[in-house]
Length: 147
Length: 168
Image (cartoon, rainbow over all chains, first blue to last red; front, side, top):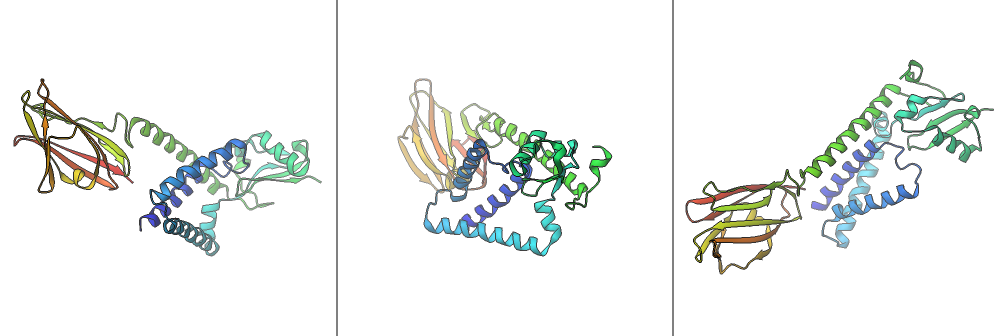
């Protein structure tokens, strides 16, 4: 029973923490982000398993996490408001070649981040060439070029 | 935020700016909460810090207990008990209540001259030095979550009650 509760508690805690961290935090993995992710994984693992390194415990923990994760995605499928609440909305940050600076600030994005995505995905050089830049729900920046 | 950026766009994506603002506010408030949590943790809210160190002393000064008021389950904590007695004579110490029943005693230094059970409590005899002080060092470990209470008694009149809270 212990391991189930621990896994469920950890799932909720991680979901809250990553919600606070925002969608951008781990969207583009730099080397440092990758190391950070490993450390978070390591810290989580200790709390999840406790001192019980048995096969049974590992399966129970994994099963609990999958049950919660699939359950939540099923719930999101049935409830649009819940999906909106958990996944958020896509947000425009460049409109017709113009940066929407206040939105970018709230989303912790710089002009360089957007131009980098523009170069990377569309080979664009200047902001004027961008019709729309959108921060997607998963934190990635989509670029739609001007014709 | 200027008026234009507040308006929800419907092309190329459907926005909901009021909700997005709530999300951003949640992130901001959450960040401050985490900062507060880190500061409190540094201060010892989760053990090992000024907020957590406790040293209850019996009013007559005979017994002194050093322990962690706040700790977490599975952690190993030090408990130091100092008793004043007559120089060169033994003092009899009784350790009881939930703390000493549910937590396992990992180490005990020095080994008491005599130790036996007394109901649900533990009775032990310690030798004192020239200054009449006997000190017992214990390391305790508990898998319990919640409040545990302990009592240290030397003789009939002197007793120190203390309690510790264990986070999950």
